[in-house]
Image 1 (tube, helix red, strand yellow):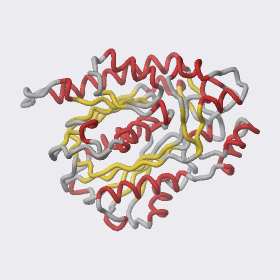
Image 2: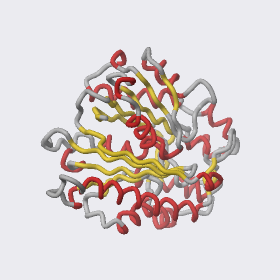
Image 3: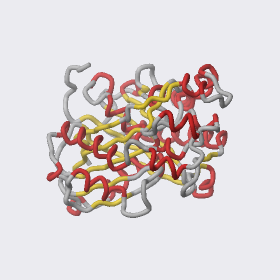
Image 4: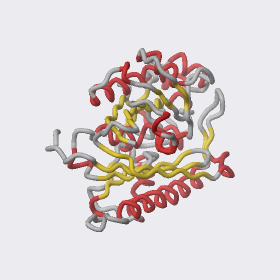
Length: 341
C-alpha cells in the first residue's frame, strides 16, 4: 500500500492554558505543563459556550459547534487531494473513523464523501484513537484487485464536544483536529506502507469510554500505563522489522517515531524506553492537544514538505479505547527533496 499524501485541519478557536485558569476549575499553566505537557489545543466550540456552560450537556455542544465532522473531514481531505494532485473523481473508496461521530447512521464516511462530491462506496472502520493504523491494517489485508486505484481515509476528530469542562483532569487533554490520507494499492507514492500491526485486549473496554450523549471518561493511571507499554512494544516491533532481512545498512538512528498524541509526558516515556534518538521523535500534542485518531497522522501531515524532519522511515504507534493498539511502518520510495520550511 502506497501513501500519496496527507492533509489536516484544525479549527481556529484556541484553548490555551490561561483559558483553563480562567475557568476556575483548580488548574494552572504550571500544573497542566507538568502533568501532560500541553500548552494549546483547538476546538470547534465557541469559547463563550465553554465559559458559560462548561459543556454540562454534550447534546448542546453538537448544536453550538462551528463545524461538523463532515466539514472538518472535508477540509483535511481537500488538502490531501491537492497535495496528491488528485480530485474527488479519482477516489474510489472512502473510509472514516474516530472517537465521537456526529451520528449513529449514516456512516461518517458517507457524510464526508457527500461533502466532497465523491461518488464511491463509503464506510466507517472505528478503533477509537487507534483508528488510522487499524484502517491501514485492514486495507493492507485486502486483495489489491478488490480495491480502487485511490482510497481516501479520513479521521475527523472533534471530541471537545464530549468533554466535561468542570473536570480538570480530562478538560486539559483534548483538542480538535482532522486528518486525511490518500492511499493506493498499486500506484506508487512518496511512501510505501511496508508493515502494519493490530492488537487488542477487550477486557479493558471499560477503561476509556464516551457514552452516547455523555462525557468522555477514563481510568487515567491505568490507561497511561497501558499506552506507554503497548506503544513501546509496537514501535519496537516495527523497528525490528525495519532493521531485519536485507536492511543491514540501516541504523535505529534513521527511524522516526510518531506516537499517539495523548499527552507529551506519555510520549516522552515511550521515547526514553525505546531509546529513540534526539530529533527522531516527532509530535504536536504540546500545541494541538489529544486529537484522537487524527493526532499521529496530523504530525506527519504538518511536516509533509519537510523531508529532513520526516526522514527515510517512520514508525507510527498508536493506542486507543477497546483496548486496542496498532502501528504502521512508512518507508520512503523517492529520494528526499530539499526541506521546504
